[in-house]
Length: 349
Image (cartoon, rainbow, N blue to C red; front, top):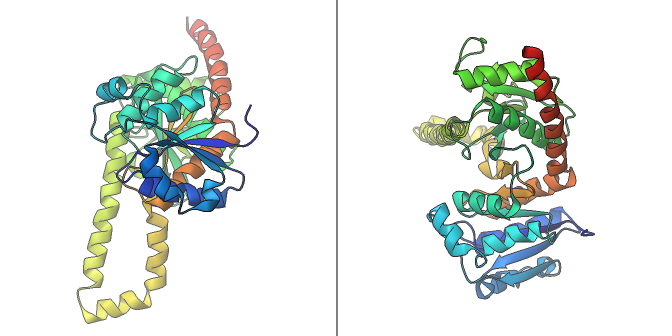
């Protein structure tokens, strides 16, 4: 067992690699005294950046990797080319070997998932992993999953997502029993496809360690109606990208409107404090870090185009997941669910 929490970082991942990863790790090291790092990647490219942050260098070690996974590389190709050669592979393997508690990467999402599944495997009872995102809401934040890992999830998988999302929300928000809702086209029980309706029935009837709040609609996500929103990967990814695009659209419209006349410019100046607060609330860097749930280890995916602050936020998420025992909690809750399912099936006969 490691005495101090250690994170494995894919230093070459993302659009800028070490230029973002290492400053982000330096910021996270200040936030979390005692945290240690293993940086995997091209040592010749990592060292100049690490030399700029002596405090980080004191708690970090570099490990060379010859191969870097390209952001546009197909997962199957990345798995073949990067196996036992890439920094991404070595970082994940460090978790598997017990050298690190979690891995954080801003690299190719498909490749990261493929390698993580191959090396870490899924937890017993998990059919497919999910990617969970932290979503800003009017109440604070919610967990939304799946946002891209499993397209077309069936009722059993949606049930597993609910359990995993509940565990993550509990670890992240400190809530003992987070509320969980199933994303649907309406709140009525008769609406939705058969898998969604069956997942809703299971969540209602099983005595699970969560508070099931029923179906929620798309506009309920931003309201923060529930702590965890569950859906399949296609819908979740579309919802996520739509929200990101809408936020940028509103920002563009607002800037244009505020700069249209002298009067609006004066109004913008007088209200600058309020606009700064809004910008802070909507800053995607403050909500960065998708968690791969259902794996036998903690894997956090940072946005590839983020900066050092955003990468540090992804590290914050990894620290919280490890500190609060995410994997053990999911395994425990799933064991409880798997024990209940046969009983529920017998009762229905």
